[in-house]
Length: 543
Image (cartoon, rainbow, N blue to C red; front, side):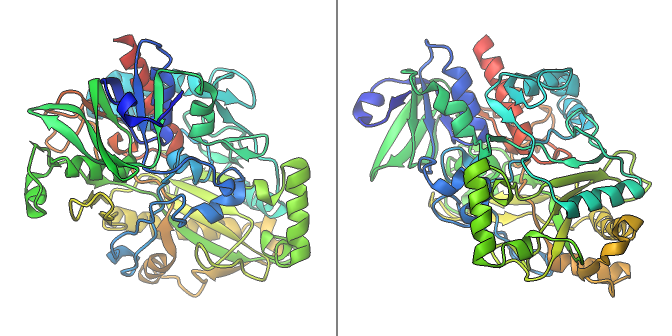
């Protein structure tokens, strides 16, 4: 993997492929495409190398989110559905992208998610049976290869190196409420409860950079350039010929003889397209950008999982709140990780998962729980001083739709991000039903001896109106934005890419990241994003 020290030497001839964004998708693309030694590949990222130590310690997400060293520091617009609150909207700005700061949960979603993509695009290669081999190809599953999992791939899927009594009690209560214990969420139907599988290796975070770039450092046909901010794509007529970017105080043009692959994520890819004059013509004109290609779907169809963080005070059960409440406890936690790579410092943000039905009208599981042996008022605040746990629940398939759009030509300006949470009546109903279902779990006999007390939202809130108001107070993003460059059939006026992820109406340009999902998957979105890159890599290598 050649280093980018002499730009004049590197950019004196075209690359076959230019990949914009070294996140979950971009690292996969770079690894797979550069496996053909005849292809010359450039991977560009605006962030720095993933050298910040907290990236690699699992609990380090606490110090990476909302940190300018690793995060773009985006915020949403004020959200009417959240009582006009604005939320932080973390996106990784570092090699590895959001895989360097995310929750490390390995989750594919449900088979029906992908079958719906196949129907939306008219392309059966997006169906569950077709994409399952792609998931298996990149995996190194802790249980070994089987019908649903692969072994020996670069992406380690591991068991968590901890357990908590309070989470085991929650899991037992869930079974009493009709949610069975299962051992694998990733077989196409994730109904049940289990400790999440995580993308860790030997107790360390495994990000996309370590998994897909580090093993290929000796490849001379791959150039990785960090701290390089893409200003815009260069469009000649109806063909994208390359990218203009800034690096070390200078502006460079890199040409792609085959294709440019935009993998900057559901926020970043929209920003780059719109700065390049590709998007809704009226919006582009309103901010003084010349229209290269009118594509009204760019930036629309934003979907995200809104989590409702319910907090319960608990008796006679230790949680992280009190274990980490003093320096002695913190020292023991540090020593445990240092000696065994286990314990609280090896924790993903959420440990126990549940998939359930918010009400009987939903045929397949439509809510997901992330249960944590800790509690706090909001992200970034200190832990509470008493024992408590958080039962965070989200609507897996929201029907509200938001948008992302740039405000100016300035590549360093933050975009306008409007997730439009709880805009749809169906989402409001699911939110209220989810709170009530959580209360059913807590009311089971498994919890009786521990006398849990609901702190948030509070048992005094009972009517639909009261509960919806409280959801507006405690609801927050679970960091899964998708859909802003959705794929679709050619006759869909809001589709941005076709089923091969080519930008509709242009040549030489594809979008390959979470933005192309037409609908959100029923779970965490990192693994599906990597599968998308695996699929397009195979397609390009076969050409």
